[in-house]
Image 1 (tube, rainbow, N blue to C red):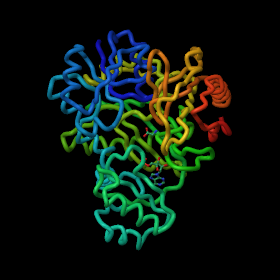
Image 2: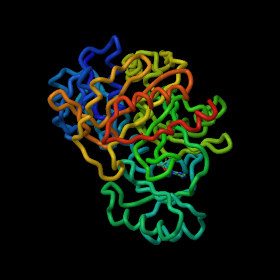
Image 3: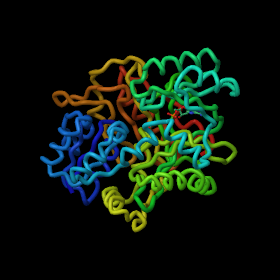
Image 4: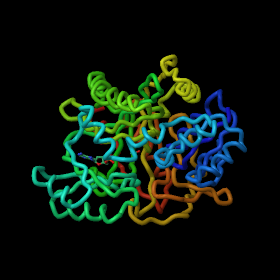
Length: 422
Ligand code: AMP
Ligand code: GLY
């Protein structure tokens, strides 16, 4: 099969590697890809939000299957568009993608279907905000309704901050959001649970925990993710049953009822409190960096999984997972998630020898004259697998030292929770 993969992050490099390993894949094109994917695929530098140009490229390269990594093209309806043009594509339709594309849509669906989630109010103006604040405890979580590249959520400890953040959103800070959601703050431990879904069935697709805050001890502003590990030990069989019964089943049923059944990867973002799951967010794609720690643990051919999912035959495949654990630490450009410099050379990377235990997924990188340069905030995912998280992390930190990138920084404490216990 000729396969096109949309996106340029660490998630896409991990998916690309697994697709490359498949017996079913022939040619792979990455649109636009990064320095890592150039070794195993053909990168094509093209704006994937330009659907017409994208379709032309897909037809030109005789693509049999399109895989979409990031949320923006999904939320903007790329799956519907490609299907209308008879292209075989894996991912949710535009309506179902609102689970991630609109927090107000997601929360309303939860309310209608009694799905456990934080108490909330959808606010269209200041008056709505003030009304919610009359009966709520602090802190309050303020969320822009639409996509905001991970920057739309603020945990506010006082009323002044809530009003300021809300005001900014109403004034148009995020172009995608005219309204916002105010939420009760949930205490507990976060975990991410993944599924692959077709019109009739779904299958478990790994669990992980990531570290969203930029600084050690989970301090500082939120980022796209500074590191992750899989599996997430907090998700036990009993909890998994509750996640499926109380959260996943009613969600999928609600979308089927609207004649817009969900298909694709589904990322269930959870807060776990007293062994009870609460839905914090849905993402309609794999997580980044969660994908980078889940994919290395997958034994089954990923292209055969996509193929079955597109035939609504996921029930016919047994998806197998390795017993090994996996962790990744994200090497970022100094300044991220604020302002950072691009085009910084990563000299030692060429000397880094990956092996079965330790490897790197590129994220914000690009090749210029066969040299690797940074091209984003999150630059490399230094990844390792093994039996014990403690040893795995030691190996990653050794590898980062070897890469010795002066313009980068990283968190040394990824996995602190599991390293204490596991
Ligand atoms: P979201 O984009 O909705 O996942 O929010 C980003 C992050 O904000 C989450 O991963 C949580 O760490 C935090 N967060 C969001 N909603 C809540 C909530 N209701 N209670 C506590 N933390 C939250
Ligand atoms: N790591 C969080 C996300 O992918 O949304």
